[in-house]
Structures are given as structure tokens and as C-alpha cells.
Figure 1 (cartoon, rainbow, N blue to C red):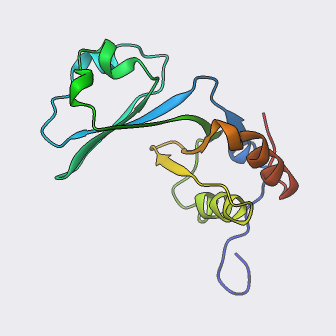
Figure 2: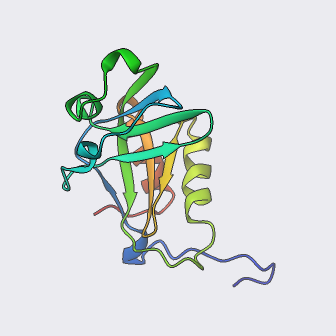
Figure 3: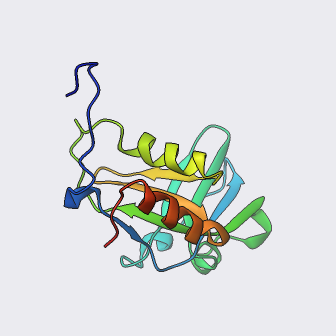
Length: 147
């Protein structure tokens, strides 16, 4: 911890190395009462995350995943993408402070919009496919390392 109470991130720490997810991802918005079929989670080697709030159901997955799982395309309100997920290698200890905010700061300074997802083990920073190279350059210039 530094004198001002903040934590310094050691970007050489393997848990903080970055890697890109190979599969293009899309962000879907469905009405809040849309049922989410269990089949959406059957493919264990793919990226799927679902968030349900009182206002909406959001799914991040491959473009065809919701429909392939039985969700009617007609129920889909919005679909955005393609996005590429940048994964912090992890696992991240829960006392590690500022990992996501540091990455977000670098990408903000490079004028790159992000969409973030956190799991127990790590963080995913999604950038649009057309900004991926710029994001990698900005993060590399800031000292982040890639696997």
C-alpha cells in the first residue's frame, strides 16, 4: 500500500495478465419476464452470462446462442455487437483493489467504450471488435501484459 492508502498494481503478476476471448460476443436485451431456458448453459466451453433485473433480462453470448437455446428471436428487444472480451487471467483475490478501474481508465483515455462483466474469479472487459487493436495498444503502452 502506498503512503496515500492506495494499492499499486503489479502488472507483471500473472493473475493480471490479459488475454482475448476468441469468440465474438453479443449483448442481448429481452423483456424482464422472458424465461431463460436451461439449454442456454448446456455448452460448458462457451461464454454465457445472464443478468435479470426488475427491468430487463440481459444476455452476453455468441450471436446464435439465445435462439439456439429456444429463446424466440421475436422477444429480443436489442442486440449489440460484435464485442471481444479481454479477460484478466485471474484468479483475482477479492482484496485486490483497482484492477478494473485501472483498465477502464486506460481505455477511457483512449476513447474506447467498454462493457464489463465480473465473476468470482476475474473480470472481463468487452470492447467492440473494431476497437480491439486500439485497446490492446493502449493497455500494452500502460504496462499491461498479454498471454
